Length: 297
Ligand SMILES: NC(=O)c1ccc[n+]([C@@H]2O[C@H](COP(=O)([O-])OP(=O)(O)OC[C@H]3O[C@@H](n4cnc5c(N)ncnc54)[C@H](OP(=O)(O)O)[C@@H]3O)[C@@H](O)[C@H]2O)c1
Image (tube, rainbow, N blue to C red; front, side, top):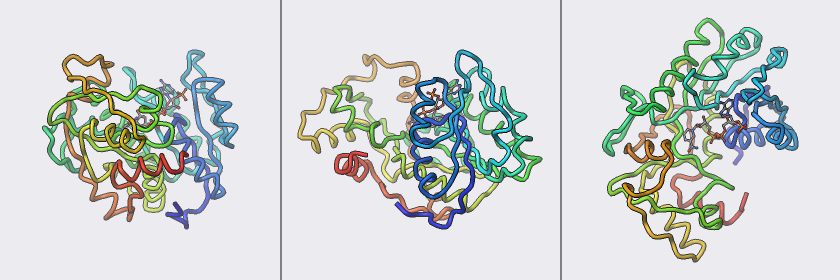
């Protein structure tokens, strides 16, 4: 996945170097970047360091704080920690790191379509007014706004990325089928988009080349569909029997999952293509799952 090839190497710092950031970091490191990031545990830090990412503990039970000198030559920052009741941890506890990052020019905040609220299955565009119905959606919207406003007086531009359901190697319907954890939650009419983790990386890198302060991007594939379609497709690829559907009302779901399934929308993805010039490597879950099965990484 060579695009975009002419992104000059810099130093990326990730607040919350989880699945998406770790995967992006591997691509950037291969292109000569320096990548740093936070995690809450020593084990998490070991995993990041094994892959060449400079890891710091942040936000764990010990209440770690960051050495601000780490930001001296940081050029790019990603905010990837979900907000809590007190807001965004990276901003709430550490906002003064901004003034310690004189070389910073691009910031990406990873948000969610929960900020739109329930749209009854309608297509949602980035210019539509947000209308979060869930606590998690309201916190996200507040966090989006806090990230954009935190940099108003700096030279850095902040972009917001509303990511649909993230999947990829190690985190997909193929993996769920293999480890016996696949479930089909049956809620008639409920659909949502997904996005392959490497397409997220491509979109973030494309945005680094075309900064646009305050811009919001829906980050999604081209086919919103029920979760059952994806599980059944993975089952067919693996030549396994799909699980029996579980009615939404009687399904055991976490509060987060129940709030997720309570809303329904399709994401308009024109902007990532027209403004960022991105061509998705995995326009639907079919290409994504085929690749995961074929390559396995
Ligand atoms: N999964 C999805 O389908 C989806 C969809 C839309 C948006 N999002 C959001 O997009 C972002 C990236 O998703 P992802 O799946 O790549 O994330 P992820 O793998 O869950 O990683 C999240 C990172 O944030 C850290 N973190 C979580 N809570 C924290 C806290 N209270 N204090 C400090 N650090 C904390 C985690 O630390 P550890 O390394 O210690 O775990 C991890 O490094 C996240 O904000 C996620 O909520 C996810």
